[in-house]
Length: 161
Image (cartoon, rainbow, N blue to C red; front, side, top):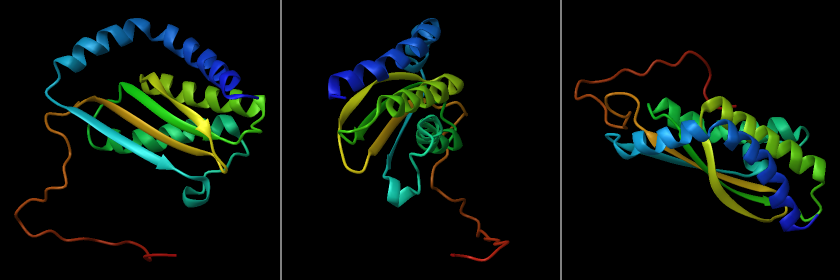
């Protein structure tokens, strides 16, 4: 399968998710434009480094989205827009691409986040980078600033494995 066929397969899944969220996306554009702050986050995933496997492509797709959105959600940001860069092996099977795209679309739809675009290339092994952004949902985003008072760290299990 060539790159253009892969793009068509992914776009077909994304178009289905986009048609379900067109009204939401228009409202999102205006609410993001007037939001007090926007929070971006990006996540680079490589299979050996992050122990993500390609055995179940639908699960892989949803896991890649979850890996990108989880830190954003933890920081008090509502993910609204998602971009991805995907590098697939040249010999990626059509059912793998379909499953991966379905997993990505399903997770984005569940999160209320729209796929705004991305980039596709070839890579051995596959690679994925996700970027998401949206308005800060809480009164203030979570930062790395600690309170001035001394803090105590409690550990309930062994460190490192």
